[in-house]
Length: 281
Image (cartoon, rainbow, N blue to C red; front, side, top):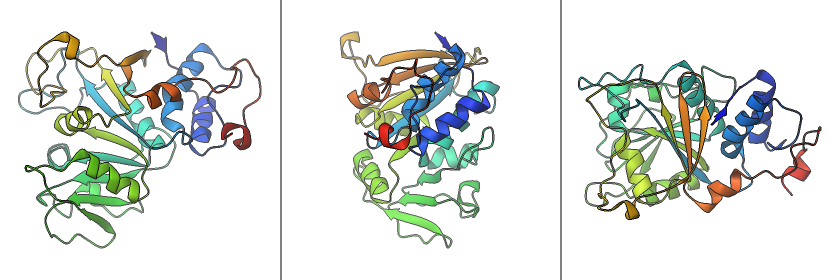
């Protein structure tokens, strides 16, 4: 397991990777800072094409909430900071309408420096109220993906898609968001939404942040719609493990692109950072 240390200097480098001004390989870093570059560098890169990452915060026994629905403190403080860092590195963060209604998330970046992402809600039947926190006007893009002909407040972008057996096709969602200029996406919840993209083989990475907590009963973190009957049929991703302090993150690469993004571009022993020209070459 690699223990992560996010210093201001290494986070500045990671944001520079996001903007195409540096790489994650070069420079003199501590072991913890190097682990931070290994964890966040693949999410910050923009030179390998569109990526879709999902993140789940869960207990040791695979729960995301109690039987009453209490999910507020499943992730520890370092797990929450990790989630905010991912938000700062993506173009848009996506949730299903159930998560928007129940958890009332803000989906902004508060626990680290960096830009706020576009906020995207999958709302087939138009259930999300116009005064929901995710639709607040604060200068960030707000998008609702819906099947119904419902108007939204000024500034909220509406993407109309058809339903297939009562659901949106995950491929159609990604295609529409890429067309809207959002190529690096985070699916933050809920488990049903994440499972749909996982089952459709559309996730580049899946990150599971495990907190030292036993809930015992309640909502499971991830349940795919099609059960696998043998272990040979199960997904076995290329997995790296990072310690964040209060939480442990399992970073699962699900595609060749994910594995390529985790490979260094240069020898990390170099002392000077790469500049845009060499990074994008």
